[in-house]
Image (cartoon, rainbow, N blue to C red; front, side, top):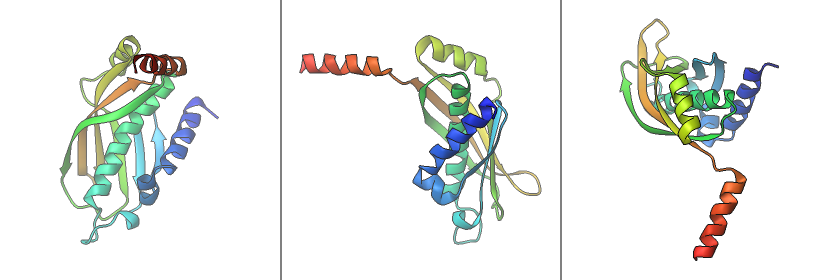
Length: 169
């Protein structure tokens, strides 16, 4: 098993623990180190018009962006909490098929710069673009978002902070 296979296995297990992604039946297809692909079937993500529900489209795109950042950090053995800071969603056309999302770093962004900033400051941000394609070409929905990574305190840091709070109480 390659290191990326192990990372994907852990991410799949984590996603199954999230009620929404479990209900959406989200599956991880591929991770290249530069992009991530996810999919979800239409049936559990359908709206009253028979097309993909907007909330499912947004959720899948956000999850793809978040997962890409999480995987990239994990690939470097960096532990972080990752959050979406803001995003813009564009609904361009109804989708009557499987929801297939792909996320990658936005143009002008650099993983090297992101990782250097994280290592130096314990926090970093990057812009991610994600899309859900239509089966015959074009996009059904797009997302551009800023994702933030904050370093997790080590157990000893957390213990020191707790002791400081106790002493100051």
